[in-house]
Image (spheres, helix red, strand yellow):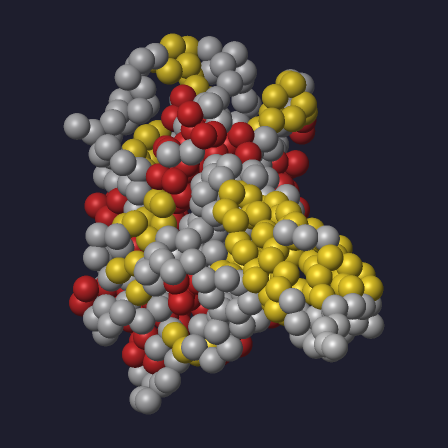
Length: 460
């Protein structure tokens, strides 16, 4: 059964009530179905919706093709890989279904690099989103949206008119399934290598009726088109689309608290600490989306009264595949980059850089056909253990630390910090990804103080 989202019931177009049905090609079948000219450029939308367009321009929705890491990943990894291995050949066009949808729909494959200034640079454009009328199938994924470009823009508010276009009130625009058409991805091995919408479906937020737009497009009082004489409303959707690339969005998404089993300790004795890590805000796993390239880790350090610093390794829990979730100083991974780029004897790159050895990493390892960790989601044939933070759930990590003989008596401050990096540092350096992409962002921090007392002496 295929959904016919626009609309199985009446749709309001300006002040008229019409019945319109969503039909047309979707997913791979839509390649080349609509020329660039079918869609208005973002600059046209900005003539009336200046504020919303300016918000949107700051987001990765707009930069989905021009963002440096996305450019490198497509042109330096996905595109050459598609030309070498038949199983992944579909990524040549398919990546663009979500990252450069205008180019995909126009059949401009592969698009020219961003420096060429083609309309692929418009990313997930205003008119593209507001032309989506539904999706094909039972599950939204792999750009299986259906578009109906033209004079009618899909919207959410009835009783409004525009001097520039007609408006269709389409409930699909308020659904999480709209986001799922690109934020779910199944790879050539049939694995859900992006599953943010599917994760949301299982979340407490979904059960409470909170959808993607409530967090990433929050409502605020305003006027969506003041330049065109638009009306003020108390609930205008802000076009922020802020997520993992926004430090403000990351702040508070994960919470950390740490406590000690005792308030005193002695050199040579054991101090047990427990850190509780909470996914306090996101309605999906953290990290989500491109989880294969993200790093989220817990770093615990102690500083004694003399200023000496000690890094505490996490206690092991003993589950299968746990080594992937504890940082190593010298473990290598990502060897398939050498295969893709034709680099003989490529040994791989540091798997966990810049995470300090012994720290707990919250990750889902993506494994290539040879069982090696990969950052190429399209080359994922299996997964390791899913040790990510689940929505509104907490996990405890313990640290059983034997205090060294040289620890200074007096106050000992133990700090637990949750860090996030969008790309593994070794990968960023090797592929010349701009450094900010791999710079760690502090998401949360908490301290506990313990008093180091003199060890008891024994003897006759």
